[in-house]
Amino acid sequence: MASGCKVDRMVDRYDLASADPVYDSLDEGLLARWTGADGRTEMGYRSLTEWFNKRLLKRVYDDHGRETLGARLDSDYEVLQGDDDLARAELIEGLHAAGIDGDRLAADLVSWGTIRTHLQECLDGEKAPRTASTDWEAASVEKAVAVAEEKTETAVAALAEKGRLAGGEAAEIDVGVSLACGSCPTRVPFAVALDRGYVCEDHAAERATADRA
Ligand SMILES: [Zn+2]
Ligand SMILES: [Zn+2]
Image 1 (cartoon, rainbow, N blue to C red):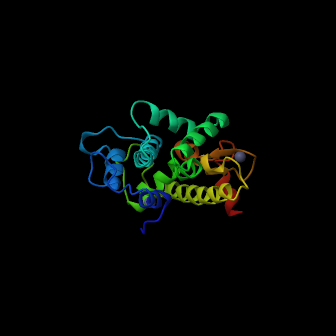
Image 2 (cartoon, rainbow, N blue to C red):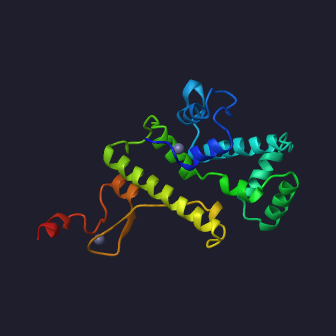
């Protein structure tokens, strides 16, 4: 699939293609950390997102001579991603003094949904199956969710940039697929329904009959 997600744009913008301290390319490093290649511990989307964002932060800090040793990078990251507006404003002011556009930096950090899309679609990555939900039907729903999250995130980020959605740049997008029973108000997450094998306990049996009627 053609590259062009936010991760790819940020890799270009911040020249991160060779920012992995271990692997030749950042993409290679992301995939290896995700799948647990070379005897590594598998990392989830959230920890990979943090890892990527901190690479980005470090690159910007290094370029502007801002200290990255010790816990500074970690604590700055927490503040940028956190909801303490005062601490955030102070940090952004401090960054500004160092010649860094903190607002832009914060907006350029990626979300875990984007990292997921990047790994699964841009890099066509595959992780060894851990659960039974590796059949194409479940995978197809997962993919639809990832696409919805990616599109929503792009739209939300654009709205935030236009000042129409405060906090949108840092918001985590949560898209879920639920199944509703056709005969009663029961609603259940797709994964739960698939796991237990029915949508609604009360109407599981008569469903087939009702459909044919
Ligand atoms: Zn990508
Ligand atoms: Zn029902």
